[in-house]
Length: 369
Image 1 (cartoon, rainbow, N blue to C red):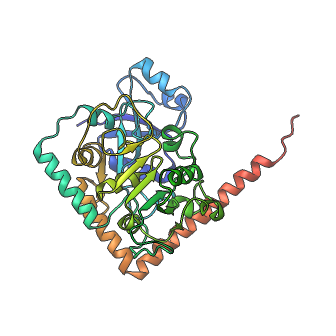
Image 2 (cartoon, rainbow, N blue to C red; image 1 turned 180 degrees about the vertical axis):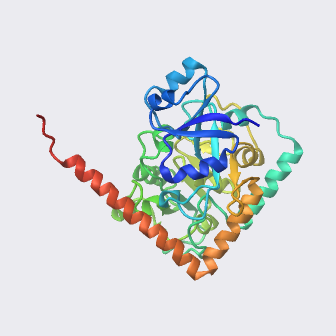
Image 3 (cartoon, rainbow, N blue to C red; image 1 turned 135 degrees about the vertical axis):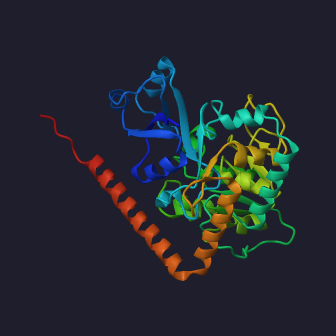
């Protein structure tokens, strides 16, 4: 069977090998510019794939004018053991032909599924089993922190516990889904909404690792929260939480799986369907969906998955079993854990060095001849 020729834009070097595994039906050409793709023969029978919301000069206009199918690619909702910002390969991706799930300013394939798809009993039973499996095995997007019994200093018996998940502040989901907000603003609004609650703030793991922006000074954060939790899994915090207050974090979705009440101040993909308390509205989202319908859309119908063991496409249940095994190995095999931690540490140092080099180059004076 002849493969479809596809031109991929905005994919950094370490993601490229995985793309060929995720899209075996495509003859992939990686390009940096539209001119490079056109010189390589880009035409109406081909496809274009863009990473996230990358804007590559003239590509969208060219695709519309030539009738070329354009897809946006992003990590799925169950990704890996360890962080993507540590250059850990993803085992879940979405390829969206309408937009992308984190951008509520435009339609997406996920929104289309939730607005219009008919979900039969068999699919919903599968979604229910999937949800239970994820909760019972304490799985999440990154699976990168240990399970602990959370201590809450100063907690009063009967006090409502609110979790506030920090986010990467320059992330596209914030720019499109919660513009003009940041982590400190989120903490302040959570405190205003729950003045008597015990608020737990969990900074984003990419920010803790030093890989991304979004750090809040401890003194500033403590004006609005009672505790800051860093070295604990998402599940460890959610077990103690009654509610989650978030901008657009996936933690809100993971909280819904665990039966928690969720307040959104932005417009994440899981808001607007009758399952969350939302500060904003999206007029396109007109339907009320059950939790299992949301799970079926987000975990089964929308993404594609790669098995870490075989390196081939698989169903979500196969990926979960593989990730569970990898997570158990990381927790129990100290040599394996040391190797992973060493790799991540080297990656973080190299990335910090590269950022400093770029910052230094921007500060150098320019000379015109």
